[in-house]
Length: 159
Image (cartoon, rainbow, N blue to C red):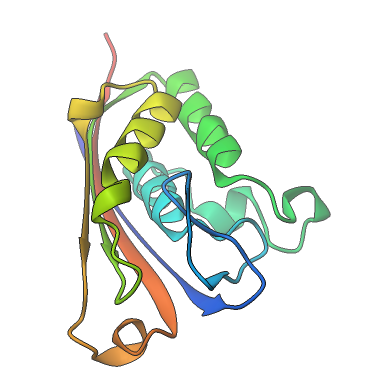
């Protein structure tokens, strides 16, 4: 059986934080504000995977009221999500994600994001697509106030 999931996340850009997307630290004067490392791309991917498996969302599994998750590396959370999928006999067919960001330009980092996400999901890099787009200076992402990400995935029941 195949199942499709969609994930979305958004975080505000702020000074004094690292910018981490897809597990890759990107040099920039601002980072994303959040309880964890605020990796908006990985959060969208996790929500897509959780949604496809009907396991709820990030807030349910990793509440932002828990000190356990304060400043946690989102790749550790992705490891836990993938372990849950495996326990329930699911495999990941593919992941397709889009980051919506005015700046910085992400092209030099996309390959590293794909590699990192694939490694933590236990799939090949060919099964992971990461794209970036701007909103032509429109909205909160276009004005540089934040970064958003969408992700879709296909999961299948293992035999």
